[in-house]
Length: 113
Image (cartoon, rainbow, N blue to C red; front, side, top):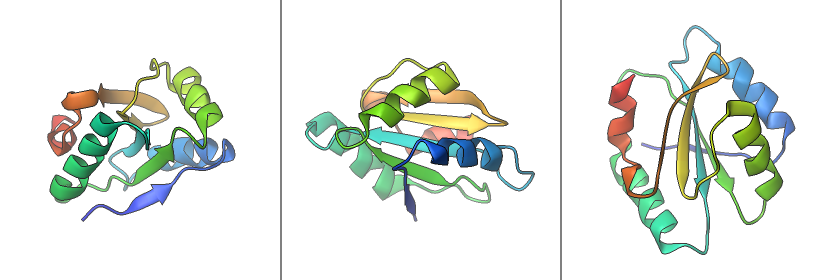
């Protein structure tokens, strides 16, 4: 089951970097969602229906792009990943190790690392 963690402040990005470096955390995911976009809604729904990390520990953060665009810009800069929407980014040891956008967003991405 997917347990969204709200991402609402730039300060949380520091916590995400730290969390991504913990031994018992396989990665941290950030899902960037536009509440006005049907493709984004479809990607979010697909993740919610199929998210199963098995034995992997992957906390997933939810970012509402319309409410927190500045945070999205900071994510792009901090992790060197060009902004897209919708987008999911997986972070390990403070580095983006995988990202996908639009129809490429699937729960199967978890199996790739």
